[in-house]
Length: 517
Image (cartoon, rainbow, N blue to C red; front, top):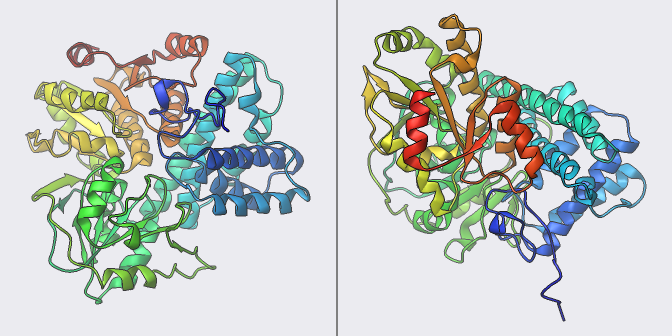
């Protein structure tokens, strides 16, 4: 008999962790205790490999894939974790000796907090490296840092040494996002202003969710001329902004909203569904027989499309065959949304933006990038967008955009008031834009710009983005809907004192403050 008072697991890496304290019996995400324990064992094994092996590109690539699999809502399949643990045993030459990552063994709450902050930042960096590697771009320095930082988590470190480790994590997060930006733009071109359809067609469809653009390209090539339309979902919406994807007429449009609405969206879609990376939620019976995973994604009982062999594309024939036996999607909405405002496109509009600022037509830029989630408290971001005055422009990236992208907030002299740069990693674009505007206005400090940050976070890639912004010198960032549970009071005070990091407040107070900062 299970003792209800004994924790069966402990996880507090995401924003929705139970009571903003920690999930102890089952993850709010749906993660079972057995799966949580295997994830912990995998991270501990990666630490042991880093402590006993010199860094190599192969080990860095392996660590990035393994860490990515442990992200929130990435993989729920115990069998896949067993395979990764077997691979760790082959590398070590023996079974891993620990079952728990080093940060979770720390008794000092501040040491544990800084080590958790580092670990979760590493998971975000790993995800971006994995995506870049799929497009042939790798950085030995980032791989080396991943392995060195994993080793450092198991060592005794002073508070200031751990602060420096967190800072280095932020620096390498910038490097990882820049690497992925280069990989994406070299493969698919620079994003351009694009209007994306939201309606549904009358042909069978395949809905692609997650983040992996290479998977989408492989699928589009394999579905040409076969009578199937392809739709994006969630964080795949920005694929439409890249020139390389617009040459496929059967890339119909975007269907549905952010990740947490997928049970509704997937049931209504009727067709085949491909989950390429994280953001899968417990699979509902309404679509269980037509969903597939690939890459790091996994779910028990869901067919998995194997990875690439050498330069060969993945084989999505099983997905296509299932789609051809499905009814067309049920229409959820009509109209269009506009995006494609990554750094190259926005900087091409730089003179118009500067003119609008100097003329007083744009008074403030508000960065509202990050993650969406199911909690009612996230309605805050929709209300902020609605309450911002008409001379404020919202810069966004990530699935947080779904809170306000479809509100019809208008434009300022032809410049839309919501500028969507793309996926969560394209928060890098927003930083590049801000730094370029700093130079254009001849300012010494980026924080002197008329810009405010009101960031929504959910999982570990958002942690990496936050550390990246801090490392680039951005201050006074609002973070919500809650501050991370793994930030101890003292570490929180350090972040407040040195960087001005603060929790969100009321809509009215925050809008007023952001327009005056």
